[in-house]
Amino acid sequence: QVQLVESGGGLVQAGGSLRLSCAASGRTFRVSTMGWFRQAPGKERDFVAAIKDSSTYYADSVKGRFTISRVDANYTVYLQMNSLKPEDKAVYYCASGRIWTSPRAMADKRQIDYWGQGTQVAVSS
Image (cartoon, rainbow, N blue to C red; front, side, top):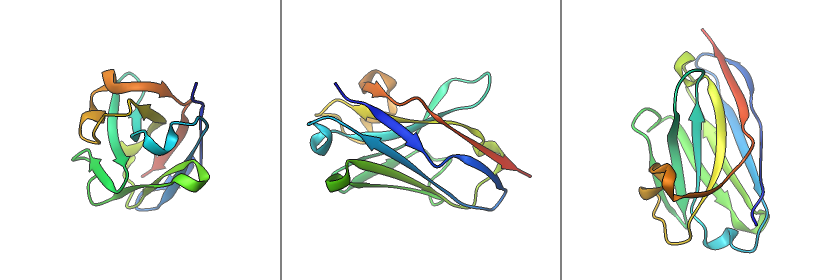
């Protein structure tokens, strides 16, 4: 069983930055692909970024602005979000994928085994 707890959400002005954290439990963390998704009101949950070892993959909408990283010793995954836009407003979810999943494959929600409870990000214009 894996538990994921996100933190770091909040309200920021457009152009600002936030860093989300995801604290994970479970013995398979170090070999799991980890990712972030987001869901805006009335919309589907969309892929944002994923990481396995040092390999990363990003949605086009965040490429160059967001950076995903992980510290395996701390069982933590981060999402550094810079140059935030109003359209980045959403609930952000941490996700743990199947062990053999590549970061690119994490964009498919069917590859997700566990979800966090989400953290709200709001961006004012």
